[in-house]
Image (cartoon, rainbow, N blue to C red; front, side, top):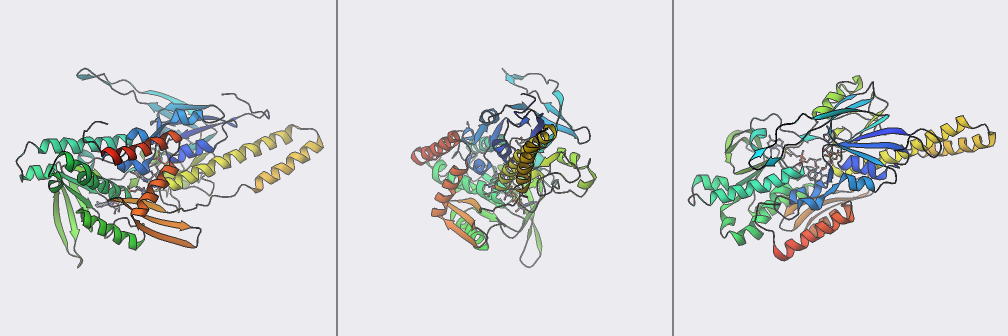
Length: 476
Ligand code: FAD
Ligand code: NAD
């Protein structure tokens, strides 16, 4: 990376933390010839999360929704350095980030290679773009970490698939109608937000449409249960779509348990409290073979650590506090976007994507402003100075604060049906549900997929499933 720009001005160092929606959108729109850019993330690929719930059922291959950071970085005009590491500490005063690469252990023969000492280093930044996302919120409910799977990362989705098959195969050894066999064939999802709804719907489809062909009768033995603490699933959707989703679940035979708050989990059962319409409560026990926790987001430890170092962030319980340009309150050099922030916008890919793109354009303008100021201070020609001043004035004028444009929300609810809350401008909201919406859902996601390679892979996964059905092996 060269130290100077064409103008002769020195390039500033940008360190980007993360390789998710916010970070990649920022990177794609940043003029990387204007800065020295280093991207740091423990995950060396971008993950298209909207299609992650389709992975455990085998509708989508995990590779189809991953795109390597290095491939994306190569598409930039300027050089971008990628380091596979996690940030472990940030010093806002010294403007440094400590990062750590965890040396993985590998299975060789029957044994894992020995634990190796992680490699650590420190990076200096002029600007830090903080986009580390959020982690799963377990609300410290006993047993969640020990017994439940999640659906946040690529390996979560493949682990859920393996778990389902492990339980199905184990159940084959047990007598029909035995409690243990029933339990092993019970798939339970906790949390009726879009993640839980889409996953439960995909698994139910899989059982009815494909598993039943390979294991006749399994559709009568296997159950899918969705547990939600509130009275409704998909609470952010239009009430009509919530009712529609409930109806579709009923037709599909998906057990929906609303008003049911999970309290504890052990290796075989979920313990919950059901709230009757009259307000009385009842303890319920729900046996499971495979359990997925989809209870929502909380901040990562590194975010809590960062906010504890800045006085203005002392009230930042649910995410970092930022201004209209995503500059951290109380710091001049750190910018934060996506799920790690707390703003008026929801923690979605759509929001993180727009924020990343906005911030990149803001940085592109800042680079121009810096250059013009540099040229003004280094010029002796009054005509040239006047010209630069005019340009500077124009550039300063077009740097407007962020405004989120909501394009609607979509969710798959099973049996080739989806729900969509669509918005056109600020005057019209349309709530749609059904098979046409399902095709709209698919088209919208293909359009959103970042690269042409991913688009081709996803469409070919859908075609393969349409022609041959989903396969029934646990390998990926
Ligand atoms: P992320 O995309 O989570 O990226 C965070 C990045 O930071 C990752 O690369 C991670 O590896 C990296 N990181 C973590 N810790 C560190 C560290 N210490 N140092 C450096 N890097 C670190 N939203 C929608 O709008 N529509 C949908 O249909 C939709 N579907 C979803 C389905 C699922 C299953 C899930 C889980 C989420 C879905 N979302 C959807 C929400 C959406 O994925 C998130 O809002 C979005 O990913 C947030 O982007 P982000 O960049 O803030 O974080
Ligand atoms: P969420 O926060 O939207 O939903 C979590 C659900 O779990 C809530 O309904 C909550 O009431 C429930 N819950 C929490 N604790 C519980 C308990 N003890 N017992 C029973 N239920 C409990 O989380 P999510 O679905 O993972 O979504 C996270 C974010 O990602 C959201 O902003 C969402 O909009 C976005 N997302 C969007 C889509 C989409 O648009 N299709 C898909 C997935 C995620």
